[in-house]
Image (cartoon, rainbow, N blue to C red; front, side):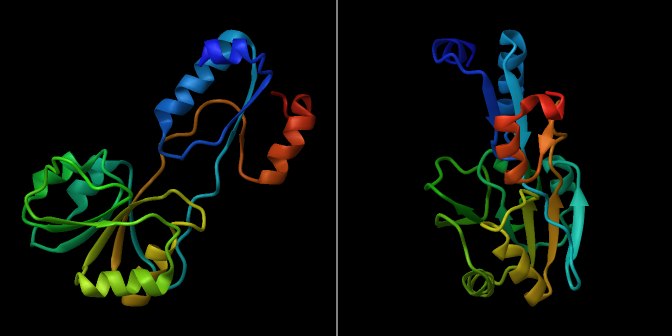
Amino acid sequence: MQAFLQAENVRQVIDATHPFASGMSRNAQAACAALGVDLVTYQRPPWQAGAGDIWHHVSDMQAAVAALPEAPARVFLAIGKQALALFSARSQHRYLLRLVDAPQDVPLRHWQAEIARGPFDVPGDIALMRAHRIQLIVAKNAGGDGAMAKLVAARELGLPVILVDRPVAPAGTVLTGLEQVLHWLDHPERLGV
């Protein structure tokens, strides 16, 4: 990343990666610090529970696995594929995976994959959950509108959600509004960056 920033003479970087892509954020922070390049992080606000939501917040994926019930359940894993191996410790459950690409070597005993790309809508997610008789959802608190349908569907169906909290945001300036980011592009000194 440092070589790219130097070659392109970049003076400002907006880290707008997924809230759970902490490795990418650390790399951007290190590269910008090494070169004296201004950096700001844009993170959409996390989801907040509303009336009727049954959310159980956990700190990370290991805590999500630990929060699963002992009795076998039908679990919708809306977490991507990187942490699937952790859920093999709870092999009594039947897992529905929603992934963008067909998975290779899934480390789970009982699983089925729904290959689809969002954004998703509430009627579609309700139909999906009913068709697979889902009893529980595990999701990352990514925020934004594009992936919220599963949470609204869970509310309407009365399903509990294990919601994995975001990793700690990188040090530095974190903005949650696009207007703030646009203002920073023109005036980085006003935010103390």
